[in-house]
Image (cartoon, rainbow, N blue to C red; front, side, top):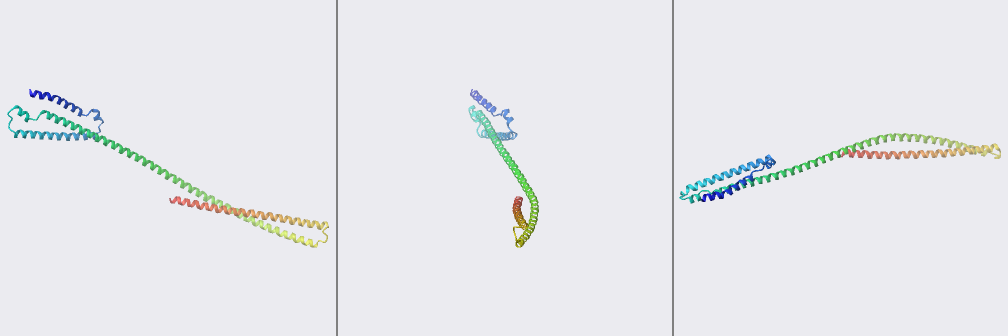
Length: 278
């Protein structure tokens, strides 16, 4: 009767053990979602736990055997029940074993999830760093290309400026030489006009000295003609002097322009040297 009560009391415990075992078994969806690395870790941990539990069972069996061998033979059924290992304790050990296995699986799953999150975070940081490095590389390449283009532009401008300066220098030099020749010719002409004016003055003075009667038509016409020639010579000389002044101003202006172009060329060459050095 006592044995039947123990068995009836053990039935719910066995049902609870089956339910716990069913809960411990992973679902197919969880098995599909687990990675090979996580599954390998779970299997290795489960194997280690099973080995430890088997070793504990063996030790308990050895202890029970030793206790039975060391104790006297029981004389009654009650003593045998007291000495024999209870079935409920064995079921509780099974339940604790399954709970420990499930807890270990949950811990391994948490570790795998944390590892997966950490791996995703590290991959995201690596991806962001790679994109940032690529953007910096592209920006540096664009800056180098723009610097090379600007350097080439400055060199081209300096070359064109040098060519234009050489052409302008030749043109201004030719213009200055032509202006000098024109000035010399004008001076020679003015000198000739001045000599002619002096001759006219001398002739006029001589005629005035030799003039006895200014009212005579011939003498008066000669004087008027000489005065007219003198005035014409003066006007021509004044025009030539004004033209010489204009030509001299043009030559001075050309010299100033040549000096400014030389300064600009020197500044452009210095800028090109600084850019090439950088």
